[in-house]
Length: 132
Image (cartoon, rainbow, N blue to C red; front, side, top):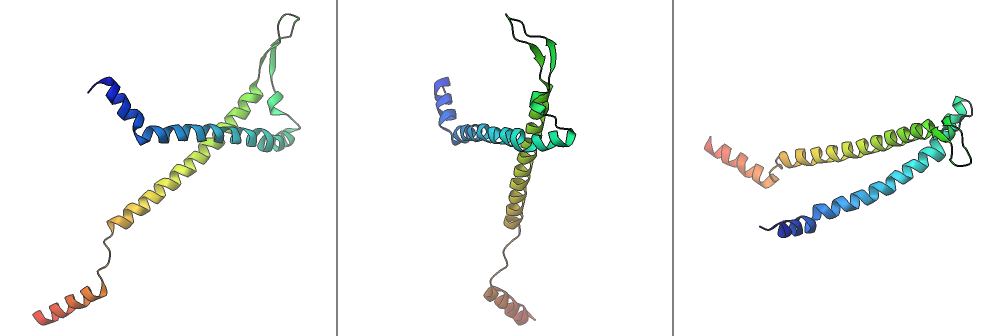
């Protein structure tokens, strides 16, 4: 099989399309979570810590000059990104846990045999009585 044919099979396969949709939705979800963290979660935390705006926390290594902007380490943005990641990871964990739970229930339901109909049970009892 040529490489082009293999690539066609791979690209046409439904898994690639599913993965692309997942990436797009994931990017949109990431923006929602980033907005949630920066606009909803971090302001109250900043107030609790003493009115600190985390997005503006930084250490200036070199001041701004006419030729170059200031060199800063923006650790506040890093803290915000860590909170973003933690929320996204927790949500994804809960989604995966829910999916696994549903799969487990479906497997257990498929594994347990269905009870025979009442007529079949009655006929089995009659047969057993006749054998005696």
